Structures are given as C-alpha cells and as structure tokens.
Amino acid sequence: MRIVVLTGAGISAESGVPTFRDADGLWDGHRVEDVATPEGFEANPDLVLRFYDERRRGVASVVPNAAHSALARLEEAIGDDLLVVTQNVDDLHERAGSQNLVHMHGELRRALCTACGARPEWTADLIDRPPCPACGERKLRPDVVWFGEMPYDLDRIEQAVIACDVFVSVGTSGAVYPAAGYVALASAFGARTVELNLVPSDAIVPFDDVRPGPATEVVPRWADEVISAL
Ligand code: OAD
Image (tube, rainbow, N blue to C red):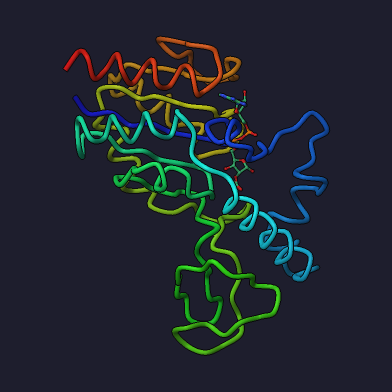
C-alpha cells in the first residue's frame, strides 16, 4: 500500500513552532509580503535575513513530537511505500527519523546562493553575509520558497500523489497551492483521502475520512491503525 502524507505547520505546532495563519494574519508580527516574497527581500534584505536567522535558531531549540515520530515509525514499517511531503521548513521530520521526505517549501537548515545556485547545509546566521562555500560570493539567502517562487520536487510529488492508495493531509490549512490541490489529484486517481487536523480545513474536495484533533493524538492513532493492519 502506497501512502503519501502531506504535512503543514500544524504538525509542528505542539513542538512550539508557530503556524502561519494566526488570528491576526501576521507571521510572528510580520506581514507575509515583507518576509516571504522576493520583493520583500529586495526591499529590506536585513529584515528578511534576520527574520529567518531567528526562525532557524527557534527551531534548533525545539524537539519533534509524537506526530513526527509516528510517521517515522510508519516508514520503518512500510519503507519507501511512505512518502512524507512537508511544507514545513523546520527539520523536525528528519530529526524524528523520517528519510523518505520532500521539503517542497525548502529548509531553514539550508542556504541558497543567488550567485551560483548552490544549496549548502546551513546552521549559522546569514545576516553577516557569509561567503558561499561553493563560489565565495556573499550572496546567500535562506533556501525557503517564497510566494511567487516555484516549490521544489513538484514532478516527484505529483507522481507519488497520482500513484498512491492513501493520501493523508496533516495540519495544513489548504490555503497555499500547489499543495492544496493534491487532495483533489489523489482523489481523482482513486486514492482514499484522510485529513488529520485540529479543525477540518476548507479543502476543495471533501476528504473521505476526517479526524479532528491535535496532531500528537490523531497522527499516532492513525499510524498505529495502518501498522496493525499490515
Ligand atoms: P497554516 O498556518 O496555514 O495552517 C496550519 C494548520 O494547522 C491549520 O489548518 C490548523 O487547523 C492546523 N493546526 C494547528 N494546530 C494544530 C495541531 N496541534 N494539530 C493539528 N493541526 C493543527 O500552515 P500551512 O498550511 O502549513 O508557505 O501553510 C502552508 C504554507 O503557507 C506554508 O508552508 C508557508 C505559508 O505561507 C511558504 O512559506 C511558501
């Protein structure tokens, strides 16, 4: 049985990583256009570099929760038949043990060189304009996909969504495309669709199975069900 699990900010919420769409519509006090667009970066690079430096440090001080661990356990049980596609830029899935994992919106722990295109692993701050390890230019930015930019690995993700038997969405509001369209694609190709979210999202097609609740409860319960049915 092939399973694709799409995760969003909700899976990391109980680890202490804030979600994007708070009641005030701000991301940690900033307008999304200021900190998550190429135009915002061009207008105020210091603000944007500092913002992601803070996020990177923040994520380094939190730990994966029971939902991340449950997905890693499921991968141990079914191997490459599970693909986790995350919109999150934190590294909590890999720290929990997931390996067959795609970061479609990039990673805080990677930098992107706008001079040569290198994507080195990066754990330090970027605000001081360190040189790119590949080309030496001081043109590194966070390797995070901003609005108006192309997410990573779309071909691989779409092929997996089309081929899967079960598509599961965890802790994502379904507000940002192309990720928000994967449930419709999976459904059109015959997959069973499951939503695990604190509150049901505004999906464009209804999920076959909706299980409301905090990720640390609903994800382990679902994963254990799948494992015990193997
Ligand atoms: P959002 O902030 O839009 O949505 C968070 C979702 O998590 C909501 O559906 C909540 O109901 C749910 N949630 C919150 N706490 C939860 C919990 N404890 N357990 C389970 N679910 C919980 O975040 P995303 O959908 O991930 O893109 O946002 C998608 C993209 O928009 C992000 O990747 C980012 C952002 O702008 C880019 O940066 C390109």
